[in-house]
Image 1 (tube, rainbow, N blue to C red):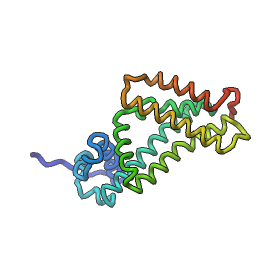
Image 2 (cartoon, rainbow, N blue to C red):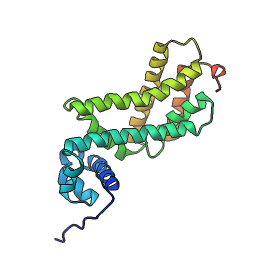
Image 3 (cartoon, rainbow, N blue to C red):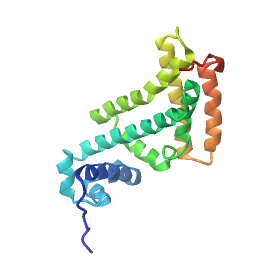
Image 4 (cartoon, helix red, strand yellow):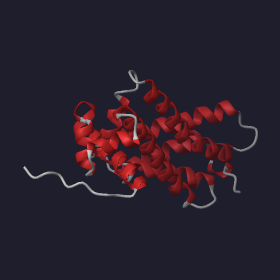
Length: 208
């Protein structure tokens, strides 16, 4: 068998390539099949380089979880920013981004399931899960606060954001598990209907 050809890459790129490779391996092989050897083969680097950049595979998986979570939130925030100044349209765009690539992706779900399987047993992954959920919910809370207007309690804003987040998570999960159940367009219609219920009368939207 020919020996693998390893590349000499920029350190930052090489570190990111290990993170990307870990996400791909988790999607393809799950936690049980993801090892140092498998990750490094996917990244095209020697096994010794993983320990140069990370204390071990546990740290690499944790960094990958943080990276994937940050990218997802950044994609949704970018969608909201591109929707204009209306907070209701921003919230709608933020939500609808979950039903389109790169977020609506069975491979991404497989990677996420691998992370979730570690929450009970790995304290760092559990901590990152809490941070990821908060980073996802905070922009939703900000948009909802603007929609509902002054005088709305922090509790109402937080609980409404929890409801929106749960709605999105449920539709995203089903869409990734079985795309034949409903289309992304149908998911958007469902989300639209519930957003109108959760955040009230459109006439209450506040502009900047």
